[in-house]
Image (cartoon, rainbow, N blue to C red; front, top):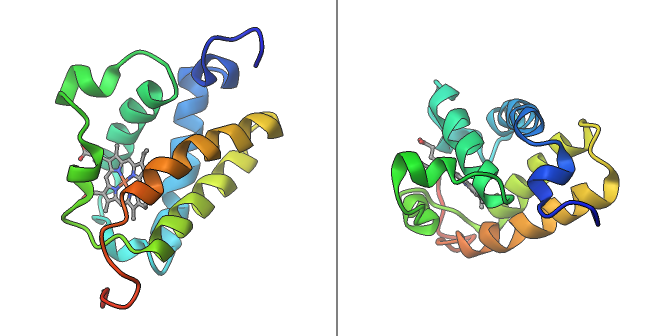
Length: 131
Ligand code: HEM
């Protein structure tokens, strides 16, 4: 990544973000802890994630251009996010990344970057989530 200014560029830009997103959501929808939180029609969520991941990884600010300040923790508050769900989310993402041609050190870096927000979005104890 040394010759690239951002992870976004290093992993291959827009096409790679699309690839990640399209591999990630089927795993989320198949995961017993995550699936119940998501709508049946996942397409709008995929589109938002494409916009957000682009800017999160250092690409153009596509999400903010469309939706304003991300306020991602606040946007996740309606959903009971337990520590287990955060790990599950990161697990699906790691699996999606592993199916792409992104070099392994960059996969690891991407997961490290996402790990902070994923844990920050936890808003519910393990015990108190009944759905
Ligand atoms: C920690 C585990 C996580 C869970 C369980 C989770 C779950 C969800 C759910 C249920 C939605 C709403 C889907 C809908 O529109 O009905 C959502 C939206 C979204 N999530 Fe997550 N999420 C997690 C972590 C993350 C992380 C780490 C990121 C990126 C850093 C992220 C980015 C987004 C984005 C961009 C949206 C769309 C926001 C919008 O409506 O504009 N999520 N997530």
